[in-house]
Length: 238
Image (cartoon, rainbow, N blue to C red; front, side, top):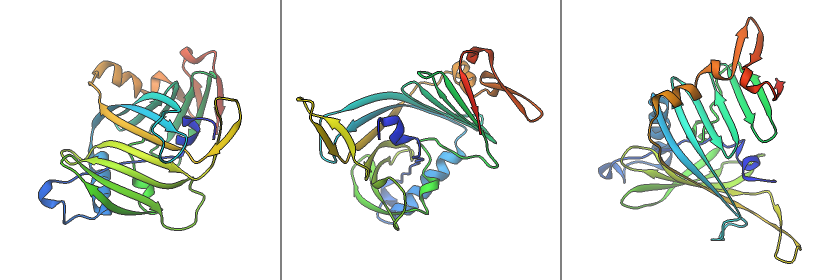
């Protein structure tokens, strides 16, 4: 695992919340399901995101930091981590690596939601339990329910009670990461990634541009042509 982006590509997360009066009545799975429903029903949501990578499960020292954003509008999901963008339309998924000037366009039989605000894909693969609550959040823990190739030992999700939105998630990886100490000696550890989400002001014009198909490519029959602004990028189709 070389960077936060490599860690995150396969993670699809969504979150939930509840009122105080219902707190003792709901299980973690019910909370997450309610959050998934709230996300799916939302027509327009957007957050700023911050990604902090730590070398082990308990470290307080940030090893890598990236910022990004999350947007859902017009039934299109867009999110960005550092200089990499992910856009999911109804039957097409796009990944844009602006550092390497590369675009991957994948035709999909059904829409695959890669937004970090979607936990739907994890409800079947993980056990969920409510480990704590405070005045503002539910804190739920997800652990794999069987031996799988999932690269996480657990996920801890902080879910705002007021609106079923995500405040924070902590991802605990099972694959060791190589790093170097101050003397250049190689070290291996199990990293932890923490992602926080904060409100982002809506910008109708800019946000509509980010989720517009014409901003990225055009279709003619089965042929896909990337837009002129990506003329220097290498295109990969799958």
